[in-house]
Image (cartoon, rainbow over all chains, first blue to last red; front, side, top):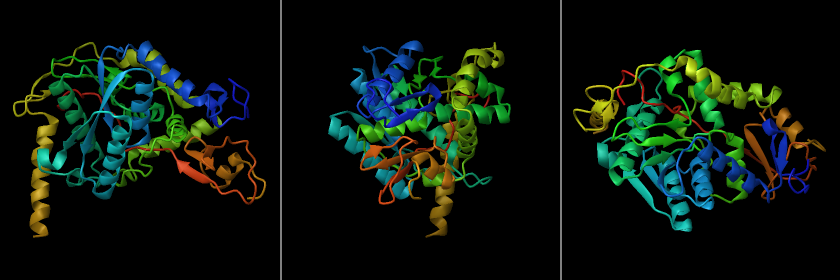
Length: 308
Length: 62
C-alpha cells in the first residue's frame, strides 16, 4: 500500500476514504480533518480560547495537540475522578503532556470538591458508575469553563463514540437524546457553555495512529470501570459491520446528522433554570449532579462505616 | 504465523482491523504488510469508552 500523497510506503490506511498515508503525510491529513470540522460546524475561531476536556487518553491528548498545531488557543482541564491507579496514571500522563508543551492544565479534585469518588457511584442495577461519571464530567467541565470565562469546551469524542451513542439511542428510541446529538451543543443559558466535538469525523483508529506517530504518551489501558459497558458492545457491533462494509459508521452518523436529526428534533425549546442548590443550569429544581453528590456522600459514608 | 500479512494475523486472532493498530519498531503497519516469522509486533487496542456522550436531557436535570 502506498501513501496517496507522496507514494512512499503507507503506514496508516483509512478504509472509509479509500486512502492511505505514510507517517510523514498522515499528521497533516489528520489535522486537516480537524480543521474542516471546526470550520464546517463553526465550532470556534482562532481568537477564542478553547477549554479542552482532558482524560489522559489518546483522543483528548490528540485533540489538544492538533488544535495547538493548527494555531488555536487551547487550555486543558482534568478531573481527578478517584478511580485508583487508573486515575493516578491518567493524571500523570495529562500533566506530563501539559508540562512538555508548556500548557495550562486546570484540575478539579472530585473527592476534595464533592466528598466522593467515581467508584462510590456504581449503580445497583449493573454495578457501573459510567453514567454518573458522565454527569460528573459534564458538570465540572461546564462549571469551570463558565467560571473562568471560556466560551467553548471541546471534547475528544470521535466517530466511533458518536456512532455508538447514536446506535444506543436508536436501539432504545431515546428521541430526546437523538434530537440533540451532534458535534455542536449550543449554549441556551448564560451559565451553559457551548460544547463541541472536533474529532467527530475521525475514527478511534485515526486518533490512535496520530498519537503513535506524534509520539503522544497517552494512557493505553481502558478505564477499569468501563469493562462490559454497553457503549463498548455497540462499538464492537459497529466494527463488525465496518469490517464488511467500510464507511458504514461514517455513513450512519453523518447521514443521521444531515437527514435524520431534523426528523426527531423537538420544536419546543428546553427551558433551563438555575439549580436551587448550586446555581448551575438544569431542567429540574435540583440538578442531577447535586442529587448525585448527596447519593455519593451517603454511599461513601456507608462504605467508610463498613470498613471502620 | 509464518509469511502472513498483518490483516491475516488480525483475522486469525479474531480481531477487527478497525479496533487495533499493529506496530513494528515504532512504525504502524498497513494490513497488506507481510510479516516474517522473526518479526516482533505490538498489537495496540484503540477502543475506549464508558459513558456515552449525552446532551442535556429533557426532564431529568443536568
